[in-house]
Length: 209
Image (cartoon, rainbow, N blue to C red; front, side, top):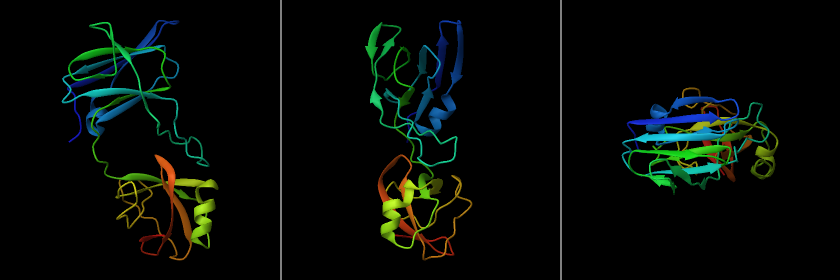
């Protein structure tokens, strides 16, 4: 079960123009067990957490992991998170995690702020699949995701184990079909270092090389 909160509010502030806005991220956090906020253009963020079910940590990153070759706007899936300190407004001490009601302020940090608990297992996993097809598995390994990709989804774990069909949507309603002979390169969107070569047949079933 993922971490939940009774309420998660983020106040974004821009001091020069005296502008601020409050984002209620409660529902998104409770669905996923974590939440990240793009801080671009803001001077500070004040995070208010009410009644967390377990410890919540704070991380930051500048890496949006844009998919190379993806048609703009490329999807942003921040990665390479680093633990970050904020100021607990009640105690004026630096904290990297909280396990009770708290208000924590963050000033100059990375582009993204992640508020992280224990995540839910996703219903589907996102992958980058090569736009082109290749005659051999070797070509798919070597050239696949370097020559353009599209985002696809599978009900599988991060290693593609057990994935038999790829889908064009995260709800897993529209299968992707192939000819059973052509090879594609494919990699997990959040970690493209591990690459596979696959074929897709007329029924949508995949074979991993």
